[in-house]
Length: 82
Image (cartoon, rainbow, N blue to C red; front, side, top):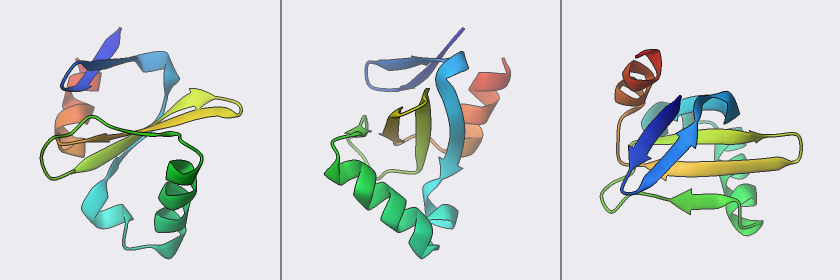
């Protein structure tokens, strides 16, 4: 099964590590540092043309990718449950 993140981006369910709300999780400096490091390493892909509402961490082992989406984490979780 696949999850549509927005624009033309779909990911495989088995690759999802976590789906996070941008507003509540970026309060923590650890999350902000993680996202900054991932962006510095070229692991962040923005699939949003609008204000980002969530981010999805995907991958296995050392091959981690972070997708920034304009869809809310609740919407993505509902899509994942389908």
